[in-house]
Structures are given as structure tokens and as C-alpha cells.
Length: 174
Ligand code: AR6
Image (cartoon, rainbow, N blue to C red; front, side, top):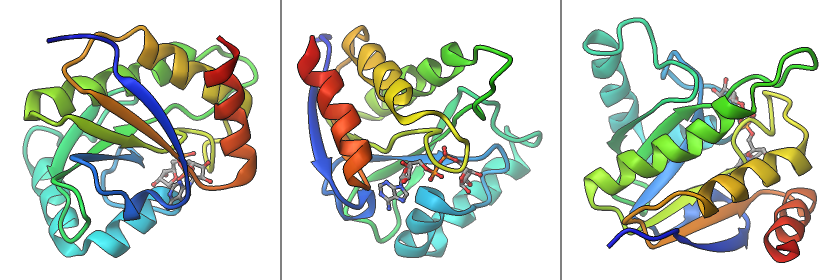
């Protein structure tokens, strides 16, 4: 049954979430980085990177395009899958909102295809990629609310108080 997933907010570290799928704010190389990406590979162990390398050797030779998503094992994380998505770098001159919305839609599509019912998301693009937190929260919440999915719960996992507040205001304001 498709409906819009229930949204929950949790402060803390996404690598500690017991969910079916954890979404990674990756880069198009799929070969790791800082922020959430670094934490996921560190705690999930080498199996995740091995699958990412295999993806690069195969279908994603040119890297994963911005706005798209692909799944791997979750390795040692308390989840079944990691869904890697590539958020857009924030730009003052160009509106890349649709690409950020696409990260949420595509991640949910991939997660649902796998049979995931619970999916944890970080605030994609709102760290190293510089997206202003309030706007990142608006796009995240609006996109999930307007997406029909077999995923039952979307859990936004917010790493600091500012991120939590931005998401809470958005979830409770409408
Ligand atoms: N759990 C939950 N949220 C976290 C965690 C964590 N363990 N660690 C950081 N955050 P970022 P981006 C928050 O930079 O902006 C990487 O190098 C963080 O405070 O992880 O999409 C990739 O390889 C922020 O609010 O992702 C890419 O090159 C949010 O997660 C690039 O960074 C996203 O921050 C992607 O940048």
C-alpha cells in the first residue's frame, strides 16, 4: 500500500539507528568522504566500500549522478542496507532544489524496491555541501510528504540542535 511515510525526528548519530535502510549523504565517487559518509564507512566496515567499488567498476563507472541513489549492504551497521545518494552543492546563483528533492524521492524509491519499511535520512547537502539548514529541512519534509511510498517511516536523524530545531519547526508548522 502506497501512502506518504510517517515522519519522525531523532537527535543523534545516524550510524546508531536500527532501521531497514540508512541513507548516506555521499559524493558521486561513492568512495567515501567526511561527515555522514565518513561515519558510515568507519562504523559499517570495509564491506560497504567493497560494494561501492564494485558499483564503480560496473554500472556506475562515471560515478553516481547528483540526485540519484544506489544501495549497498550496511556491513556492520544495525541496518540491512545503506542507500547512497548524492546531494547537490548549494549555489547562490542557481536553484538546485529539484536535485535535492530528487535525493529524497530516489532514496525512497530504491529503499521501497528492496522492501525497506523504515528509512533513516541525514540532512542531505546541509553539511560540507553548504545548503542552508532551514531550506534543507523544508525541501526534505515537503518532498517526503508529497511522495507515495511503501516505506512506512522516514526518520530524520539530526546531528546537532540547530538541525533538529529546523526540522522540528518544519514538521510542526504545517
Ligand atoms: N549522523 C547524522 N548526521 C550527521 C552525522 C552523523 N553521524 N555526521 C554529520 N551529520 P555532510 P553533505 C550531519 O557534510 O553536506 C562528505 O564528505 C551534518 O552535521 O555529511 O551532503 C561526502 O563524501 C549535516 O547536518 O553531507 C560528500 O563529499 C548533515 O549530516 C559531502 O560530504 C550532512 O552533512 C556531502 O556533503
